[in-house]
Image 1 (cartoon, rainbow, N blue to C red):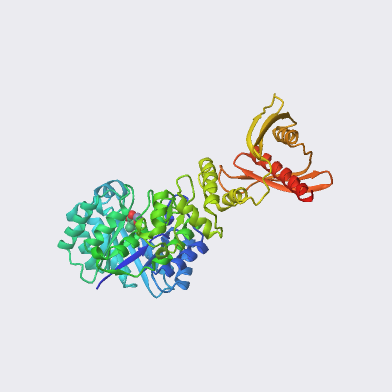
Image 2 (image 1 turned 30 degrees about the vertical axis):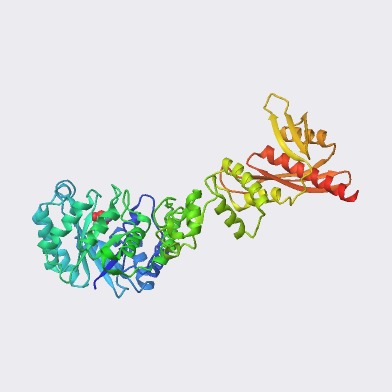
Length: 504
Ligand code: KIV
Ligand code: ZN
């Protein structure tokens, strides 16, 4: 059974992404990871572009031995010679020659007649065959090329010695049903016996993967793609999407591929890190949300049976596990499971209280993290004495007003409220708390830090307060820093009051 070959061009077409140039060392580490992923062919670059590119490809050839290493060339002897130099250290070299064939490219870009294109194609392939057996030919802009001329060029390329014919949708303009027809018609007109039929699709209309797969369904046996789908303009077909479709649809593709899909996530992150091109969170297969579930109904389903909402096992692409995002849409089932995983087992009553606090925080924040949960637990599990509880806080402050705080506290069933002015809103809060509780403290130290990420992060205030001759450390957290400061002071007051109570 024929295999489907995966030709990775991250280091050539991918590197043509605006702003994505890579150093030789970076190219080598990506090539090494592509070899671990077990791609069949690595297109390592375009050697004629610079002497540095030749050296980078030579290094890859010296160190990466399993895949075929390809270099790109125009139909020019100088390009082919650069390729030969770049590839002289691999035992599996491939020369990839391309020449535009569409009318628009011939007329405006190359300013050449069809006969000239045919001559250049044949001569360059014959020349390259003197040195290398594995020759790929691409009629650039094939999908906008007159069909009869395309057949003529491809036949001439095969007769001259090309062993792979690649059909590029250079500007990403073709529709899947049209590409199916094109591949079918080409296979009817041309014998591809002992010649690989490859496709190379760009993503200008978001159809690169669909077009590549439809061509494979129609008999193509090589797909050119890039990690994370990077490449010229809107990029190329994304390798991870192509690979997972082939893996998950054996009934359609009926052939195997060599890709070790468990390496997909790692290579995706490496390419993103080294090129500086982020992976969009909702990107299929490798996006950070690809295995994240937020809605309560989905989380409940996942916890009961993963496959209710996941068609891919995250481990199959190298992701450790699915992620249940705790946010305002989360339900009690997911939250309870999460707490258990953190090692907390709450009684029914505690959990009910916890859930109310959780929803209050989730309404203020997009994602609730473990640190947020710990703080709710402090309150619910009464890990800190709760003699006084904060009920209400109102601040009036500005550059031309005297900062004033009104605070309402609860002690048992009793509600007490008072106001105070201060040097700033926090000082005003602390004075109002002192007036209500009757406990006078001196603030010795105050620090504020964000303890969770994002603009809506929880801020944690840590303070040291002296009450007579006792120094107490306390902290408070909230998405509002004044509230966090008041909570910290109240915790200090509660610890002091609890200590006194214990002594009495
Ligand atoms: O998009 C394209 O046509 C190419 C060729 C060089 C294969 O990248
Ligand atoms: Zn391309």
